[in-house]
Length: 144
Image (tube, rainbow, N blue to C red; front, side, top):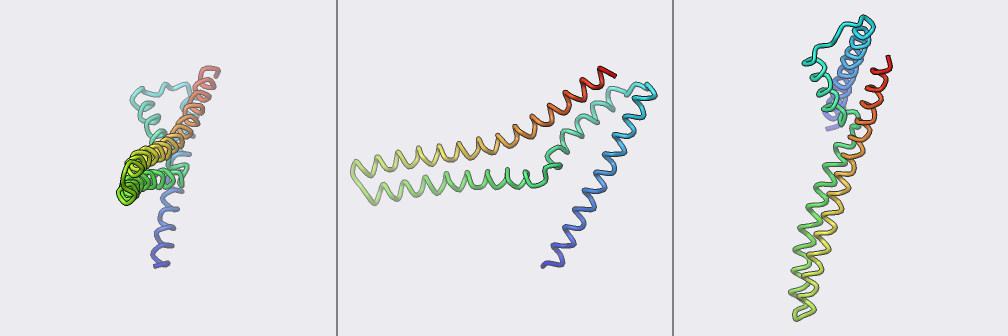
């Protein structure tokens, strides 16, 4: 098992390095074209912008997994909370049991909502950093 895992890790590292080299070549080509004052066609510029946005989450490698884990944990909390509150309320019985069912469902729903909001907050931070970087690049482009 470890042999396959290490081989997979080596392959992924090699692909990541290759992507980094191609990205660096693209940046060098862009700066070369800027210095030559050759206008970049709009289609090419849009493609480069789109590619950069897609690969931004790739830069933060483990955030992908953290986002996926938060989603899975959120759904587990919701289902276990719902089933657990139903079971707890039914075994208690009476008015108190009904109240425990309602409060358990509301509590599990709120926990689910908070976990999904945390997941979206990670996305927000990544996009905020990306937008800040593109704004700075735009300001630098206008000044030069």
